[in-house]
Amino acid sequence: MYLFTMPMTKHRKKIVLAAVVAALVVAAGAAARTTGTTLSLVAYSQGKGVNFTQSYGPSTNQAKAVAAGLPADLVFLSAGDDVNLLVDAGLVSPNWDKQGYNGIAADTVVVFAVRNGNPKHIKSWADLIKPGVQVVTPNPFSSGSAKWNILAAYGAQRALGKTDKQAIQYVKQLFHNVVSQDTSGSNATNTFLSGKGDVLLTYESEAINARLQGKNIQYVIPRQTMLIQLPVALVKTSKNPDAVNRFLQFLRSPTAQNLFVQYGFRPVNPQVAKSPAAVKEFPARPGIFKITDKDIGGWRAADKKWFASGALMSQIEQGIGGPTSG
Image 1: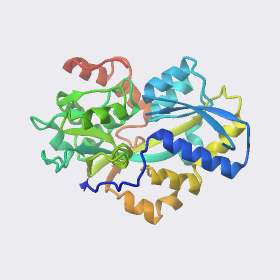
Image 2: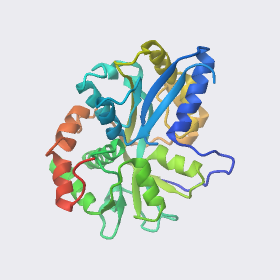
Image 3: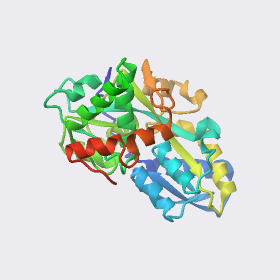
Image 4: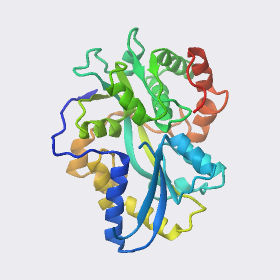
């Protein structure tokens, strides 16, 4: 268990995903030295060369909006499940995850954001289901980050040797302690920072971003946690596929990956992952598991089991009077 308590220095600037994209666009333009192209980027959360028009919102809702006709040249979403939604709509290639680094632009992990001094002594997944512990997590029917949180909770139990039935029961117990389910991970963070709940299930990058904004947030990286892989993909209807593909290639370059590190995301480029800045910022955890691990089986299997109509999360939410749609 790691507990991060260090305050951010005052000179660090406010950071949201839009700032990351802006920095990447500037760097991409400088590297490519092209002019006159405008790309439409649809993403989760909130000069010279290639310019971007940008749309931000909850990941699943964003994917649904693109499927319904929201113009986009490329999507940067929170979960592969949301990209698959666009694959099924005929808007993204089914081979999107066969691209460089499996179609992933950056990584992060699931963490527990806690109150100052961690008064509830939250260190592990077992602590989240104790009586009196109030949990904040987003709505899994609108938010990609919520899906990661649920799968992390389930996968952690499997990693601890629990059966499928026992791990599902853990998730049910966990949601009996959930007191808020906002539409997105960013909104859930704001709810937690406003004073609601004892612990927030969130991305490591989201917690770092809050601290970069000068907010006093501490977070714990549990021993068993999930590697969150953030996908980016070309939309087939793009009128600028060459420019999009150049930008996608640039996202995996050391220049772009170092920018991701600067803004709290774990790099997918192995060269950058070994850099002193990345090693210092992102401690390794012995129990990190992935969506492709056999107990979860990839996004298609996870969606069918957990998030499709009538699946486990619909049943769990109905049982607690929670949301059953986005």
